[in-house]
Image 1 (tube, rainbow, N blue to C red):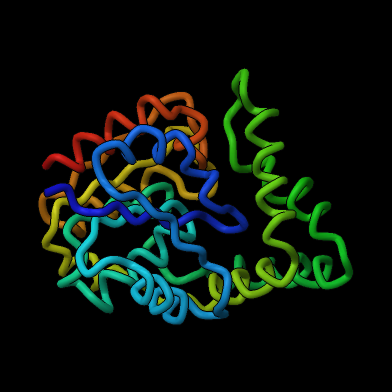
Image 2: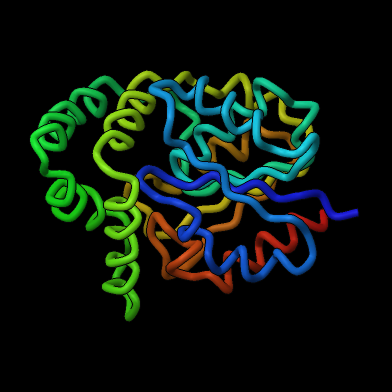
Length: 231
């Protein structure tokens, strides 16, 4: 039997981040996305995921979703049958990065969510490509749908996230580490670190993609995920 697949989206994204993957895999297994909206800590967000997830499931997370996925497998390793970490970071947030979030938080509280997402965040997400504008528009739609309160809670969760390197050393299920070759937010060396930490894991680098390979290069991403799901 094919295990259900739980997908965790990145910051200010929803299930539309995984549109091509839901289309590709939902014919063969149950596929669900779990929102990361209601807590100011990664621990609380992971608890929410476990509350709605099947008893056993394959788990994939991108960016913030990957950060929460690491906490999910820390809390309940017996429930996760395989793990995919996409464009993410196992380390606690660097103090300088955490400090840099404060002006963004202040702007969003002042009603400037769209400006923060448009000018400071989303342009760093993607590599140049013919669909860049279309993908950025979708990112803005997702962010505006989620709204400023989710931005504030997610920012706090990222600022206080735990280091998960010890968690990864204990992972004992088939694991895919995947990232866009041009990811400026979570560069390749972070993924090489995760591969080194998880015994037997596979590292796949997607050419022509930045931080969101699920949308930028869906065919190559789906190929890697399909191999992982049949390991």
